[in-house]
Amino acid sequence: MQKIDWDTLGFKYMDADCHVRYTWKEGAWNSGELYESSVMNMHIAAGCLHYGQAAFEGLKAFRCKDGKVRVFRPQENIKRMAMTARRTCMPQVPEALFMDAIKRVVNANADYIPPYGTGGSLYIRPLLIGSGIQIGVAPAPEYTFLILVMPVGPYYKGGLKPVKALIYDEYDRAAPNGVGAIKVAGNYAASLYAHEEAKKAGYDVELYLDAKEHKYVEEFATSNFVAITKDGAYVTPDSHSILPSITNLTLMKLAEDMGMTVDVRPVPFEEIEQFAEIGACGTAVVVTPVCEITRGEQVIKIGENDGCGPVLQKLYEKVQAIQYGELPDLYNWCWEVPNQRVD
Ligand SMILES: *Cc1c(COP(=O)(O)O)cnc(C)c1O
Image 1 (tube, rainbow, N blue to C red):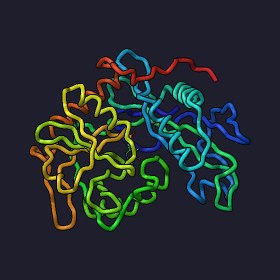
Image 2: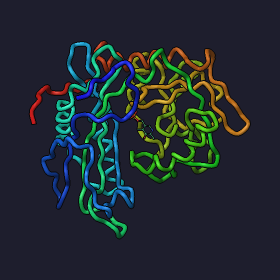
Image 3: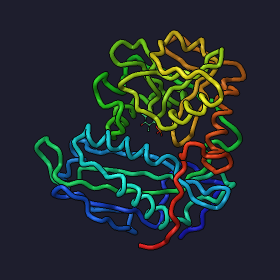
Image 4: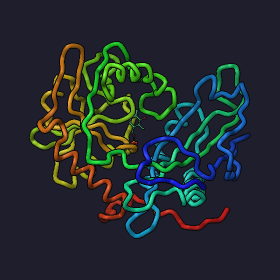
């Protein structure tokens, strides 16, 4: 394997030694294999290429303080992929198969897990696609489930860095009864154009309002919206078109444990200027503070201190400490990967 400089790792694709891949055919999954090549053959008429049957997940393995390798909340990703599969007419990936796939691919690429203390982790990307030939619009007759891994660095090197968000009234991410709540690849296709425009205009992320009325806050393109009120409550929007973030679920539980009120409810756009702190949360970053939100001519500054508030900072530190095994794992969130390098 190549020599990896753990200090300069970002969030960028890098080949590991192998990925694990399974095929579903005639109602059953095969037993899967580790493949060294990162290139796979696919039929030009594969259903996923034409009609978007593609579900993905994102989770991380951490090299902990005690030297063991643990994956954070994999059961939640398995449940969520099951929901995505159901909504897009793909076969379920059984929990046992999924867990075995994680074990195989993480063990086979153990050299790529950043050492404890570097702030890095092994990003795990499961992918389920309709790989069978399908040119009439219908679910594909064959599926591929694979997991690739890559080492990633800490998102924030010298502390959390607040970002600026832009609200568009011209673009929506997810329809009210559409597929916003599942992790289907097409949701990202729907947000790419707005994201590129936002970047060109000098913003880091775009924030979406509900597609029906543009009255309520939904989420950022790739992360959930969370806010801390001036009296210290944790608020996150309630909507059927928001992707249920596992990081958000984690933060809510930790906030509750810290004695905070946790409110999952509709969040009107007008409420934004009232919040003490706003953050964007997801697996890749845990939580990014948002210091400014722009909609048309209106520029809303969030909180003091340029938006890097103490509550989100504290929650961020807690999540990381649990992930690296520095704090007790009270809810069994961390799954220790059985250490056996066989295949
Ligand atoms: C994946 C994703 C998130 C974050 O979910 P986590 O489980 O916390 O990583 C948020 N919003 C969207 C649209 C996503 O696809």
